[in-house]
Length: 154
Image (cartoon, rainbow, N blue to C red):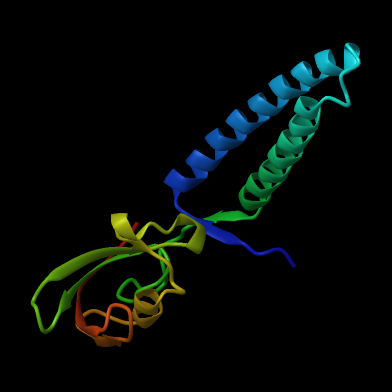
């Protein structure tokens, strides 16, 4: 059974654009390859590198298509007061009284520097299913106690 990816609209659009670019690159490389074959240079090391590049492009195109074919848009959770994939949360470190803004996203969308964390990360898994005002304890690497101050979707 295929894995479904719950993706943001933003990521879905980025993947669609990436697929277009990859297809265009592949088309151009195949045209260039025909010229090499026409002039009998298939044993040339550059041709072998070309073959590897085309194989790599085909694999990447397959991966992106697979993700898009199995993508489902993020839907608001039934319980709006519960953290789920797609939730944006603000948590406050109890000790330091510093707030963190986080967005729980699929693993392939993660970017901790932008506050986009995986539900599989220590912090993400501690947040899933929790409610407003809940206190969570997170083990390493972000050890601490946090209170959920706000939950939004999208």
